[in-house]
Amino acid sequence: MPTYQYACNDCGEQLEVVQKFSDDALTVCPSCQGNLRKVFSAVGIVFKGSGFYRTDNRSSSTSSSAPAGKPAESKPAESSKPAESAPAPAAASN
Picture 1 (cartoon, one colour):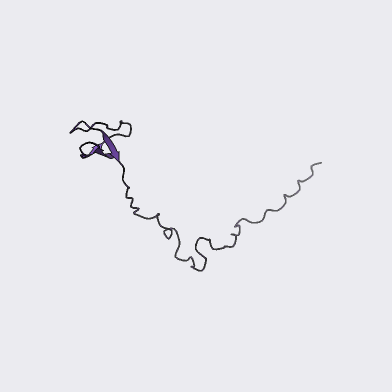
Picture 2 (spheres, rainbow, N blue to C red; picture 1 turned 135 degrees about the vertical axis):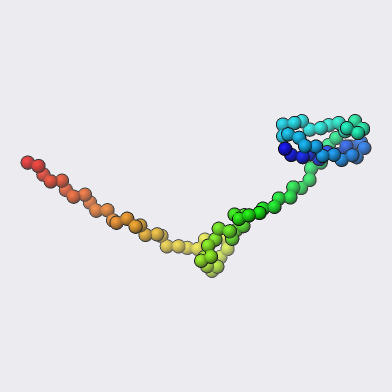
């Protein structure tokens, strides 16, 4: 459950309350019965672990000669299947 920060418009008291998303916002100060307002602040996000950086998915054999943002050109892979031939004609039955 998230923690919300409130400030009283009348007495200036600051409080933090753990509430469900579905709960209504508080409107009355518990100290002076004044009006409360929600305080919004920036949220710090820290990305840890693999998969968050551009270099995480690159193999060590990739050359750095390709310009940033453009993938290196590669040749199309050759199929390992043998080429299919036309089916043999059916034997005539008389």
